[in-house]
Amino acid sequence: MLYKRIMVPLDGSELAQAALTHALDMCRAFGATLVLLHVRERGGSAEASDRFLDFTRRQLAGSGVPIELALREGVVADAIVQAVADERIDVIAMATHGRSGLRRVVYGSVAEQVLRRSSQPVLLVRVAGEAAQPADEHLPSAS
Image (cartoon, rainbow, N blue to C red; front, side, top):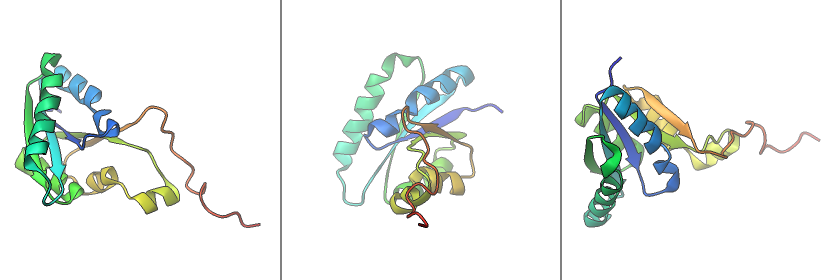
């Protein structure tokens, strides 16, 4: 399969940035365009979001990869899934904590929601040093 448009959703966190290296490698290998997506909360500053995306694009300027920017507003997972269709994305690259069990239930996972709902492939990159926890780690013992 040939990937022409690879999207990385970014929220300004180091976690989200972790997928960039992998996405850039894929873009170079396939001659693809990198689409940087930022989803702001309703009522959030569009100007601040634009500055963040532009700053990130400038940081990647020497990568040799064509870069486009996409800005959405709303519920993050919903906005990512919709952006995939709107931007004709072939694959999504996202970072994840790799949480499991009770921690995942309590904190939820945007990456998991996107994985379940996206019509396109999703590359999940586990952040270095973030090992998945056994599902029963946080459950009380039966003793």
